[in-house]
Image (cartoon, rainbow, N blue to C red; front, side):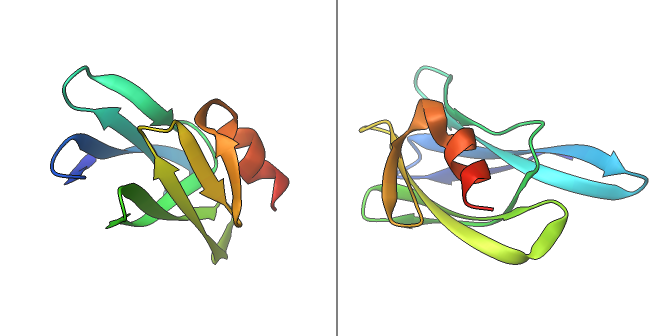
Length: 106
């Protein structure tokens, strides 16, 4: 089941896209969509990244992610949809390169 949460004054929607990794083992990958244009700002659907929590932090979408199958280690990713960047482990990356940046930290 998809889950939706609105952030940053309802300008953005964070959707979790579930996909089954193995029998009954599900990953809920995040997609961040700009509501006005329906443009996908961030798309980790079909990836190994599982969204645990989402919040707002100074104009950014703050997400806590875990990588399947290493579910006990969590990473904070702060997405700046206006600046099209994401901060991973204290380093800013272009949103277009976010999955590569995430995979490099594990």
